[in-house]
Image 1 (cartoon, rainbow, N blue to C red):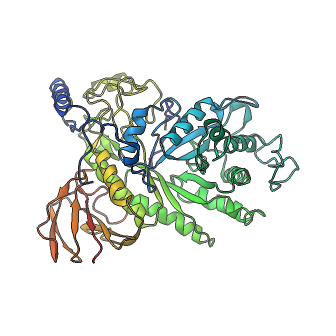
Image 2 (cartoon, rainbow, N blue to C red; image 1 turned 180 degrees about the vertical axis):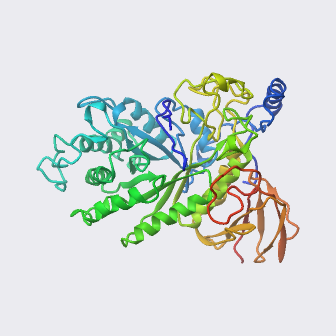
Length: 546
């Protein structure tokens, strides 16, 4: 896949509050723009865009939720740390930002470092009250060794060992160790950046992810042994500089099945320092796209693999999402299912997020991060742009792009800057806000999952207060009525957009109307499930019984 050059993120594809978002701009103006767009493209673009309101107005800092369980990738990046991006993420309840710290953009010449862009980026995260999942990624050309990194297997410390720690400096030949050491020293709580900005003692990076998708050749071709070494060096250096930091095994897409994970764990198992440094990682990360069920399934795959070695680690799904086809810059003309495989409608994108998070949390996942805040450039080079069209531009080059964003790109963006409803949220924004408000208010744990291969999937969670959260949806292409038995406590039902649904009763067995699953082209659906993205989910919140 191509690399998103505007912010450095490249995504790889597998196989391959009961209220709406607050209004800032006039909805009437939005509808006028939409009507004008549809009139110009009535013949060629047959699928209309869904009108949505603009981002909410600025709200006081103390009103932001900042959920510990939810984040968004690329809330900001080194080319854009605007207040608007942060506001648009915070108003939805995000608590985490995730972005890569590119080594090759920092060490511009051997032993010459320029941290200025990343200093500004992290400082803004801290000022906005966000926690940051930083990815250590990239390699300067002058430290390249084939598909790996020069002198990666050199000793970590100057005394010739991998375990000196303390005040022993890094070995002069281990360039990766030097980069990691400088990064953590600079960005940890109490580090160089924190001192320079007079931040609080707790302000800084405490979550360091070692590479991104090392099981995908686009990101890592050095092999399992070299990645195991990469992880080991980083973990030892990180823990030496900041013992309270947590190390994340680079988020896996499982594009090669379990191959890389199995081989890396094999190398770690045979390492004499594995027990001293707790297997060199504290958190396991997985990436789940296109089919929300994979968020739970890949979590279970990782848990089971670790269990074979008597290991247990918190799991994060720190990338999940699905791209849209019926909204610019997606292929809005793609009425043929073959043209839009693994691409959703804007409504299905919202449903995907709720289902993906529910599946992940049902398996005990700690943090879920949606990819991504804006469309930005997706998997396309910076500068990729074209006006909305009905397919006629496909003969002259790039004619559609990735539309993962919670928000549509603003005018003047690096890519895809010509949306008639620029800088407005898609329905997935309301779904994210709903998740933050329902699941972010107090601790919860998974209770049950039923109907995975049946007509209705039901996932139940219990809050620490004794209340319950039930997420359920229809897997069939027919409208269904589901009999839900209440506990007798107060019950509130939410649609995916956060609106409160009327209930015929608060006690006994309630007949819930569940909308059918829409057409979604997913050609290799696993198991006997009838749909990948089901119908609009309903979230029930049942209070604790007195």
